[in-house]
Length: 332
Image (tube, rainbow, N blue to C red; front, side):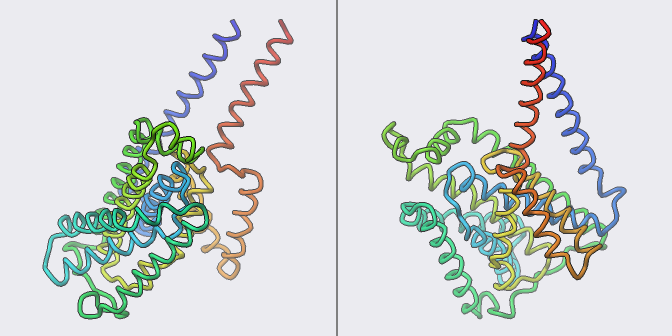
């Protein structure tokens, strides 16, 4: 009897969760038809950071390798698109695919030696890769424009059409990233990288080729980060090394993925929406103190939700069901 009641409670919670997800999806799909241009831009940026946070989640959250320099793939994707479109008159789709290929090759070449490092050594190595790539891009003036950057051609159409185009492009990329992560984590690949995060030596003892799976995880992460960089370059229509290789992008995405819940599917998405919403509110209402306010809010969330929002909600629902079960046992 008690088990059936608990099952009904779990089913009700799942139904509510499904309805909330469906409502959110409908809101995002039809958002451009009733939201202002300002909020379209905020949501588009949120989708971009959600992709970056989910990409970091794959290598850092699931595999346990904190890639602080993951922004290098954002910059490579942006410059691959910029150079091919401006210098060679390539199409956007072709340039984006080339950017993904460059990033995959980059992770394959540097992943084998760098992923042998662990913990903060790996994090520092990824920072070094980003700074070295940034300096190289800055000095290839004839190809990349150097510090002056590159200006990409604008998409034909009015401002409203362009806003909707990039809104849906980033929304689709976020949805694709979510689906790919979902299926990968339910596959042999997902179980392998989670075992690496838990105990890499034990994973090796079980016959898992840890180097291979770590490189593959970083390649998937790099691919999605590159797509975000390509879309960003086309969206902004002007890129510079100081902007697309900026460590602030990586730090912000890292905070989002930790805030939502490392190693969870929806955590990075929730983290991106929470941080962007709070940041927008602080910027619009507390202009002179927005950074301090944002920092205080993040600290409060981390103190009360140290494992992220997703784990906090899961534990709360679990505890509520447990309390109900105890009460029912006492009344019997």
